[in-house]
Amino acid sequence: MPTVSSSDTAIEVIDLHKSYGETEAVAGLSFEVRRGEVFGLLGPNGAGKTTTVEILEGYRARTSGRVTVLGLDPEGRPRDLRERVGIVLQNSALYANLTVHEALSHFASLYPAPRNVDETIALVGLQGKEDGRSRTLSGGQRRRLDLALALIGDPDLVFLDEPTTGFDPQARRAAWETIRSLRSLGTTIVLTTHYLDEAQELADRVAIIKDGRVVAEGTPQDIGGATAHQARVSWTDEYGAKQEIETDMPTKLLHEITGTALAAGRELTGLKVSRPSLEDIYLDLTMEEPGDE
Amino acid sequence: MSNFAQQQAPHRRSAVTLAWRQYRLERKLFWRNPSAAFFNLMLPLLLLLLFGAVFAGNKKYVDVIVPGIAGMGVMASTFSALAFNLTFLREQGVLKRVRGTPMPPASYLSGLLANAVTNAVIQITVVILVARFGFGVGWPKNWIELGIFLAVGVATFGALGVAFSHAIPNFDAAPAYVNAIFLPVIFISGVFYDTQTAPAFLKEIAQILPLTHLIDGLSAAMVSGKAISTQLGSLAVLLAWGAVGGVLAVRGFSWDERGN
Ligand SMILES: Nc1ncnc2c1ncn2[C@@H]1O[C@H](COP(=O)(O)OP(=O)(O)O)[C@@H](O)[C@H]1O
Ligand SMILES: [Mg+2]
Image (tube, rainbow over all chains, first blue to last red; front, side):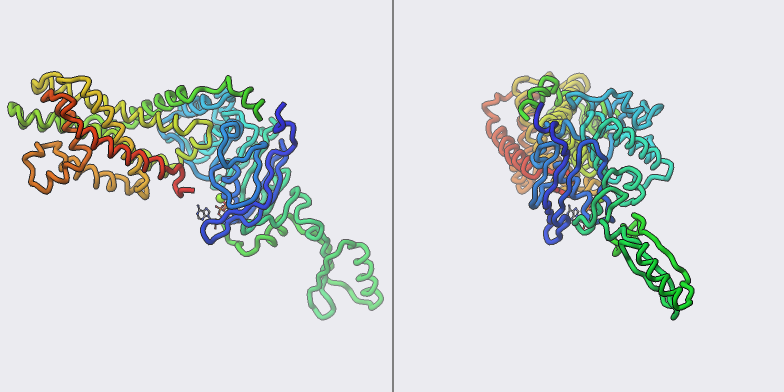
């Protein structure tokens, strides 16, 4: 078998840079996506997510850095790669006057080994809409057709750029289900999102990016590194001031603090031991734009 | 890598097959968009019927209007339609979507061009039939000459249409941009009158424009029966425009709205 599929790595990005004139949208990104995993690029608007995935998809040329997708350099858009990659763009239209079935049949014919059209329709949950023209679909249904078009070539790797932005909660749940079933079929998925809960729900690993840099990377459970998961011991001291200490050894610290307080005969009001949630970490890391959508 | 390519190659459809599939899709979409179908096919026909009816019996004028409308039809169905459609497809992101699939770009564009050419051929056919049976104009005198001018005409105006689409900033502006070129050109190039009777300065402009030369060639083939050897100048002007259009069409081509 070819070297590409014997490797465990689906995507490798090393020190990626992309400038648009003066603005550096991607400023030294490095990450790796393993085969079969769901990898989340999480970050606020303007962080450089779309720029990054569109470089991986072969739509944009990078300024510098090394990029390998399924063992190939995407920059020349090699046909081998286009046959094995499915793409859901952040915004993109459908042929308004084609039915769901017609659109999928047409795109299926472009691939060497496509999925079955009806199976794909079922996979994204568009049953009953086969003969509806795209123009008659709701926003959520269009996005599902979008996804179906990305899956019709039976890709090894799928890029989803903000797949659920603008969805109502129910439609988001449905989309999440589809993405989970894709994962269980062994497809590698790269997904961008600015929704923390989406990354948490779907991704095996997450890179949080901001201003074109990775600020944290890991599983949703241990992202942010050890320091981000330090326990915080907080209380109100005898002068009414709030105190907070971060520690790796909360038991020892608590023993010392309570020992001192007991010896002095004082009560420690508001004594609390806590650990930051992923949300705290995310907000911490991406603070400057709290109002972003 | 090479292994992989060998393994996949037998399942790949040829570039020609994919161009054919795209062509079939474009035909389907064309007929499903009634307003586009109307403008492409009915407008030249209506104009021909209108002018023909008004000037029926005036053989000299009918001889001018028939190749004129035929030339206009070629320009409308290639130059205008492609400039318009490509702006739409680019803005909507359809081009970008196609670019993300294994479809070879040349196959895709061939499908689009072939669709435009089909419309041009349909229009010329309609014009010939209406002229023959509606206004008693004879069958074209020289079919080969007609074929040559039609082929060069669609190639030239097709290339110019693709090239012009790069100059149109967005789809809302497309009708204004396209008509700003199309309307003056059809008037100056003598779709509705014999350019020999026009004022001198218009005549000079007309001599530069490709449509004038397409109409001259079509007139020779359809009406006067002048041999192609007398039309080489017109052919040369058309080909020159086609070459410039072709270079600009390829050079400036963008699949993405923002030109990434
Ligand atoms: N084609 C482009 N030309 C110029 N600037 C761009 C272009 N695309 C993106 N940018 C800029 O690059 C930065 C990152 O954008 P983008 O990759 O779209 O971020 P995200 O997808 O995370 O919202 C933004 O500041 C954006 O304005
Ligand atoms: Mg984006």
